[in-house]
Amino acid sequence: MWKRFDKKTRLFKQSCEKSNLNAQTLGVATKILKGCGVVAYPTEYCYGLGCDPMSRFAVERILQIKKRHWSKGLIVIASDLRQLSGLIDLKKRGLLDEALSSWPGPHTWVFPALPRAPKWICGAHNTIAVRITDHPIALQLCRNFRSAIVSTSANRSSKPPLRTHHQATAEFGDEVDFVLKGSVGRKSAPSTIRDVMSGQLIRGA
Image 1 (cartoon, one colour):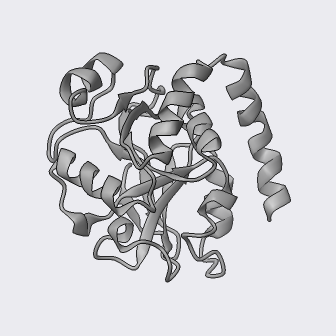
Image 2 (tube, rainbow, N blue to C red):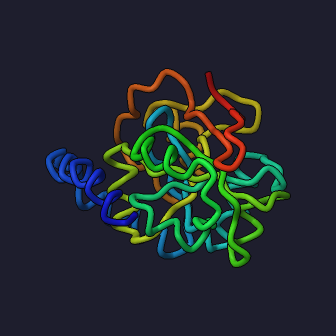
Image 3 (cartoon, helix red, strand yellow):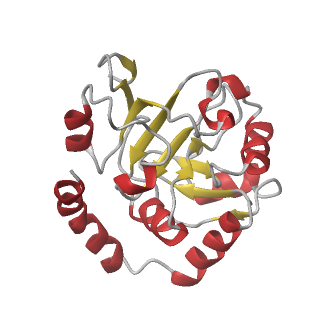
């Protein structure tokens, strides 16, 4: 399974290297994540707020910034499947093959959570919503951090998500530790969300 997935992601890793991402600003963002800080960064559709999913302190900061209730849970993104293997149960296959074939890409899948997965990420559920991102900056950020990161839309609860560096800085510049500059992807809507066990469409077309 790992070899098949790694083969597919190789081209996406190469595209990151060719995009000449600013190593210095990515380094700053990575250092902040390692220090349990909060970073705003571009994703496939909009700017996201991110942190180390294992840091309860950082996650609670994001929930407070967004005014989001903890019970809803949060999406986690990664650069490859290995970064998710400590959070989700891959033995319960369901539509696992379909999920893998949709990644890397703007498709979020809800997986059964492993017992050690943090409750502050799962919320009131025994599942976690995860995605292997194909956005060059978000992907490189996960690779530099060497772990999955939280990815929740940069907006206050019930407000539209922000799609530019200027908007994210104006709204959250005083509340997050760093706003990573870059362009969001070409998606015209947030990622679809499906349940990997039932196939139920939770969000999207």
